[in-house]
Length: 136
Image (cartoon, rainbow, N blue to C red; front, side, top):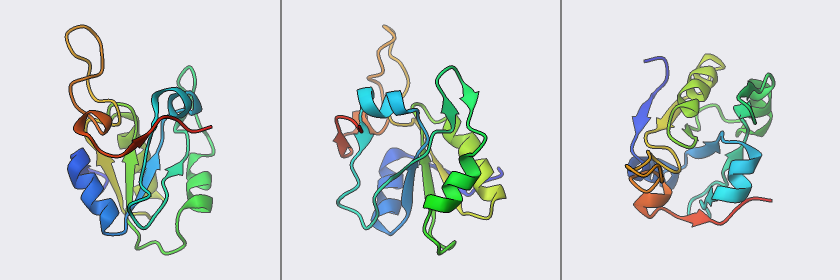
C-alpha cells in the first residue's frame, strides 16, 4: 500500500476528532447536489479539491491545490473521501508522494449501490455521520 491506510467512515470520523483534516475529492456537482460532510464538530473544516472534473478528466493541479490548502504542518494527517472510495485512493497515493500522511475512507461518501442501483448500503452519509445538503 502506498498510502497510510484505509479507514471505515467511523474510524475516519475518529481521526478527524483527533485533528486530521478531511479532503473531499469529489466533483463540484457532487458537492452541490449530493451533499458534503459536516466536520464543524471537529477542529478542522474539510478541504474541497476535485480529483477529476466531470467526465473523468484528471485535475492536473490537484497536488498544487492540496499544498496550497492543506495545513502548513505536514504532520497533520489527511483523510481522503470520494463517492465510493476509489478516487480517494488515487488522491491518497498522490498526497503521500507529495509528502503528506494520507488515508482513504472505505465506502466513500455515498457507499456502494444496493440491488436497485441506489446508494443506500453504506458510506459516510448512510452510516449517519454528519452531512450538509450541499456546497455552493
